[in-house]
Image (cartoon, rainbow, N blue to C red; front, side, top):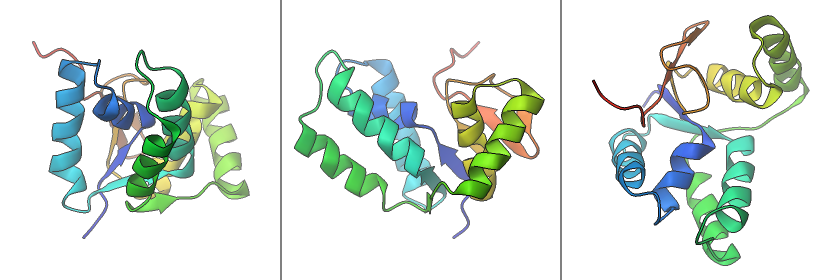
Length: 142
């Protein structure tokens, strides 16, 4: 199976946040749809952010052991590990496209995974980064 999508941490956070309402349902449906087919990749940055947010920033934080188990499950997806080459590519992306270094790392991880779609709410919906198109799965439909 070919990876065609990359999930940012916010997608997974919403899936585990019992207080996120409609966004939780949207995130779970997205993960079920693309993750179950082996078409969804993540990065080590996504795993770190997920653990940090779900144990510290949610209205009802996850217990550390629950968040750890979720990270174990997420790490089963194709995983992009950050290295010097990825960081340097992200720095170039940050400078060229005027996006945060953290967003640039996500974009470059998606590119490394050969994803065509980057699911995130943190970048402009529809923006294309050299063949990786941003899709906000939580945008309001017209």
